[in-house]
Image (cartoon, rainbow over all chains, first blue to last red; front, top):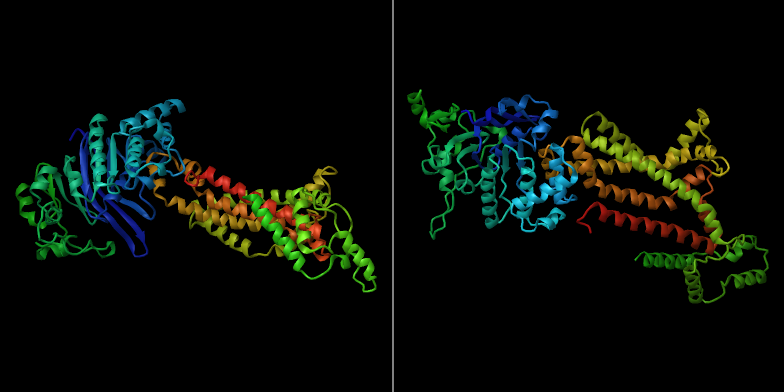
Length: 328
Length: 304
């Protein structure tokens, strides 16, 4: 596609341990088009955060990107030196994190943290940068910007801190914003506000957003497409409406079924039985096989391949093997 | 607050001295038993030691409030002039030692934290463990043996006034300062390392990298400042201890400082001199702690 901003190809990120490398992200491929909001959904430990850190080049030790390619505007980020990555981070690709109250430097004034981000990438005087910081704080919906500039993070609420984080991320007008569980630590009402804000800003700033969450409900309202991740692999990828209405993968079906509904009912909440397999005990076949209600003999031994259902709709499950051969 | 602390220290010192056995009048006149009891009585009267203890206490507090510590019992020299002569030497020794220790400690601690589990870290941590476990008098004796005795590079001790000969003055300080500084540097390095490692694992560090800051900017601009509180605490504690804790060093290097005066004063039950010395030392300790508290507020807005 011509307007493709980011393309991740067969990304493998592993932790080096005494037991050998543990592949926490194993063969992830997806792309993000400009102006698009893509949701990445999965349980804890499914590798979604690590995927985003791999894009940023910030995989924590002892983790390491083992193979794959990450093209950003046609340039493979994995081939760049740290000195070149530093110029892209924060400028072209920005990231915000889960718990904003601990993600801001506690001994540094909020305004100062925005000023620093601006002055890292642009030649601006302290006054110009301060002026812009004030503007940004207003833009992210903080009622009293002048007071907030001089506040320390502990003096603000979690929602306000997350807005400051967004202001920092937006300070250099990035083309891609990665939001790693930006609403998880917040109250439900504040969650909705932050999501609305992100959705509004991506249009205003004409940027793409990767929204990482474990909560399907969070992405349902704002995302254009979603990728469902499980145990380091993408299980299903496609248009949000398509996936929510016609989930193809048994895992996605389970996820959707387990969203609690707001109605009085005596039924127990649905849950997918079992847990995500440990990294060192990954099955050789499909990774969801042990928990899958529709598992077949084949599933235990052979890893399914990504199969194209229709244009832009992908699923990784043996149920659709015949589909793929038909498509090909 | 600081005044109350000083008052409590002084009261305790007074109480302790009067509980301690040994009569200063007897000791001042010589320990042989031939001294006329009447002479002893006369001296006790002159020193005010025959008054009721509560009255002695009130007089003492009144005098201290006016910064008047009286004269030394043994040689009649005013206590304040004794202290005024000796304290600059001890303070100079303490200041130089803590500065050297802080610089070495913080730098090595940072290197160890940033090079975690690599050669530089392993070397620093093992040296620090050695430095902490080595007693000062062993280190001091070793230094004298190596640098003065064998290599003949530096004088083994003594004191020459700064105004007389600056070079000789500082040459005589090198070994005592090194002896005092190295073990302190070892503790500071360990504290710096663990504090830095803790901060480096905090989530905001990831945000800083995500902003596009280079490693240097992250470390020097943010991590160090966040790691500073435990480091400042340990430096402050050690500095406070130094003013009263240089006894062995003053003895080993033959430095006429405050601690050697205190030692002599105690053995002669020279009440005014002991009280004067302890007043100065405890005030210093309390002042350093006050300063550290103020520094906390400056370093971390959450403390304010």
